[in-house]
Image (tube, rainbow, N blue to C red; front, side):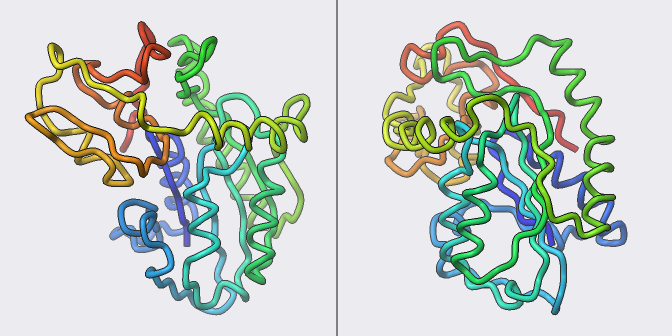
Length: 263
């Protein structure tokens, strides 16, 4: 089973590649468990049952050198029969490096009595744009990262087949500091949805942002989106707006969107 959370689409691409490799006959996608809607909002009410000894692969993006809070909450709360007998692997996507995010993943799985195996990272296009100095990649770098992804996933699959139990990650410099100091600060001070706004003059009232929000946090009022308090900070609304009408305060002014080539 592949359990994945994807904001803009990078982690979804990787999850699909893993699914094609490990479940080639699963045309219905039953082995792909997407974290959206109620699965994120009410994880304690969800139930998963898997056969004894099945492999579970957790796929998610890196948030400020840590695991997305909604993913950690899901791990903590989900009713998961058979998880204690499964092999659990982590495959994260990141624009540059991961810090010690795998430590968080292992810690939360350990609290549940589950056994974490190998942890891997896949370099994908940068998507975080809500701070000064953060921008999407230039087109050539973006294309290069996407082109390299299938081979990297194939390498990961071979290691999972061999029951690899180590870490195959791009940690980057100051990894412990980033995950244990910067990440908590990011969670506390940089994840509020309140700065989101839509330019009424540009908004075409299509409602795409509200329909696609994984937390159902966006509602349409008088034809324009309004953000509530429950946000995954995935930036899907910003990047997927067809007319570039959404901004995060002034921090995204003039910045480009990224649209993953989803299959």
